[in-house]
Image (cartoon, rainbow, N blue to C red):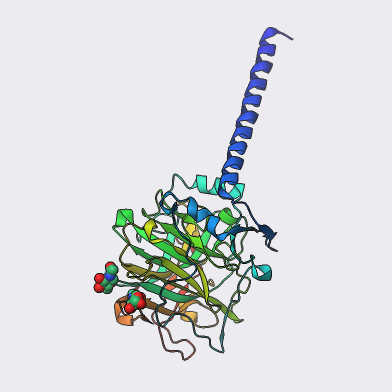
Length: 394
Ligand SMILES: *[C@@H]1O[C@H](CO)[C@@H](O)[C@H](O)[C@H]1NC(C)=O
Ligand SMILES: *[C@@H]1O[C@H](CO)[C@@H](O)[C@H](O)[C@H]1NC(C)=O
């Protein structure tokens, strides 16, 4: 071998070794991070969808790693429940019965979906794109939206039943149907979201999952989805963010939905509580200290569907809801039912009023949102939304 060839071999080997050791170091770092994030479990189990849930001591859960929650004492239930809370059933819609297998976790522990390498890699990939959870306005690149929004004011709660759907899943498209409550100035927006999502890049599959997210700075540096960062305090043993909704609506088949309530009381514990129905589950809460700009109340309430594509230059967008327009009506179109809010210190959920909401869709040829709808002879405010997507531009 000539010395030049030898030199080349040495350089190639050195680069190769550097590359491997670099990767190994990166991998080790991820593993260290995972060990820090995933708390010791009293019991762990795997669902049929391949998700691992760790049953963690309720008083040692990841939320308490948040610097503002160092001395936080976990609360099991709200000090006060607003009246009018919850859910009505009817013969025709069926609420989805949800919950982890075998009732979830033992007493005194809470289920925390185990954070995987995939989750960490996904989270890091979002760092350059801060607006990944919610469109900031009508023209946010990569998003389309169809929603009903309450006119700005002082609110202490929002709730609604959200129909559940399967979405064709690709790696670079995602979908969510959520209730969003927010407050604070636009650049420091404090917000909470709950609903369902299909997001293959984030979760690794196309399942329809319970989804929460929060932020204290307009989806910039703070907050995350589910329990990937400390913040949300989990209370229930069997309903947990990231879990799969098994019963979904189908066109001309059964219609399944799940009902969420978010509320706070500014004169009691002031936490932002999350409940789920029909099981009357106190799922958990966001402690008030997370939201410096939303201490008193929410100022904005929104119920809607949002689709997002990874590449904002793409023209091809996924379907929203069940993939049909709201005009198709019950049995076909996706819906929000019994949307309600808490308006004043009376502490009572009341129906949203048609006079006080605006409906909005940013691309009516692809997605629409309907007006107040008649639904199964029930009083209250319901609406249909969604559409087939397709070539929707950006
Ligand atoms: C709570 O909200 C009510 C209604 O807006 C207001 O009158 C009251 O002063 C607030 N209480 C506290 C403790 O902030
Ligand atoms: C908060 O709780 C108080 C005391 O129970 C109650 O009088 C009030 O109506 C509640 N306010 C809200 C907004 O829920």
